[in-house]
Length: 194
Image (cartoon, rainbow, N blue to C red; front, side, top):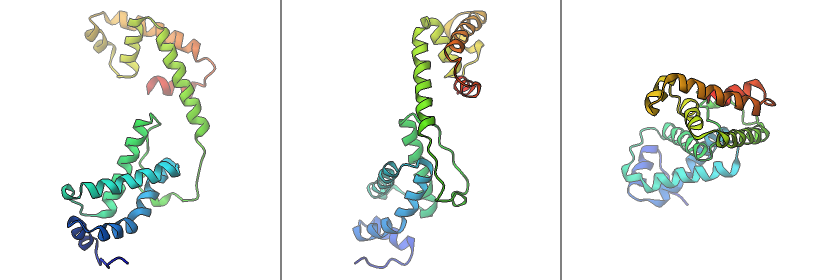
């Protein structure tokens, strides 16, 4: 049976001294809050559990270097940060950070699987299209649409005229429009401005 730790600060002091029982109490006290935060973003039970356990493992391993003033605030921020890292590594859609998580019901759910599959298929089609472009045209398109450089910046970087950049972009976009003619305008514009 676990000892009673009346406050989070007393609990944290014990954890800093390597008290495994105190960490078990900390884990029991806050696991559900962290899991709920992560799950509300991912809607994936397995990934949410894994991320939640990683957060607690990191806290235990790095306890000597951490300065935690508010467990709730720290754990919510850690949850959002780990979700961001997870989505970034999975090349998923960007995570949104609602200000008030409690406003979202635990009973709401949605299936974004079809949208994610369509997005990935579209992304693969765009990647295949890019490989069909001449090397210089592809390079200019990537600098413009993915690295968000201006035409002047691209011209300066590549040592070519601004007019050449504009012509190459026009060429790439014309062929991309042909490839994507079956895709709705909203999705197409979103990919180009991404």
